[in-house]
Length: 180
Image (tube, rainbow, N blue to C red; front, side, top):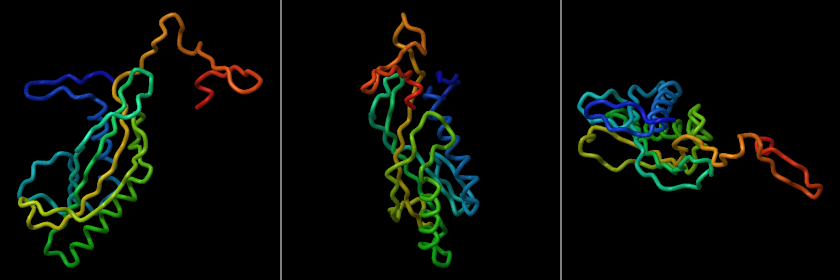
């Protein structure tokens, strides 16, 4: 994917990240109707509808390169489920919503082709955030490999599809796409 066009104060970001965040938000909204507000990178403000699910990508590290010109990064995401503290059994309600989010994350690809499945999912009660003193929360963390950039064919003299591998004791010729 190519870089998106930007204007004014907007920074250029790899478009895969924007597509992924849009897909995550849409999937969470559709799958978790109990949550009244889902937002990535929110500005915490008074009057946010609760229960809420806010999330962000909180870390990125190199991952195994696919060898096709793209960069693979392992992204860590953190979501926070917020429930009004004055609700009856608020900590349990937050834990239940966190468990529902964990269910949604199980083997999740967000219907985009440039990510591997979610892994390393864990949940725990959230630390207290002063701006959210009226809330009880649970945090859910997960990791996902993301492939950034366009694929490239590094062999100029060979058109795509002309590469074959010799495999097995009978020296059988196999095209790479047949190995998938």
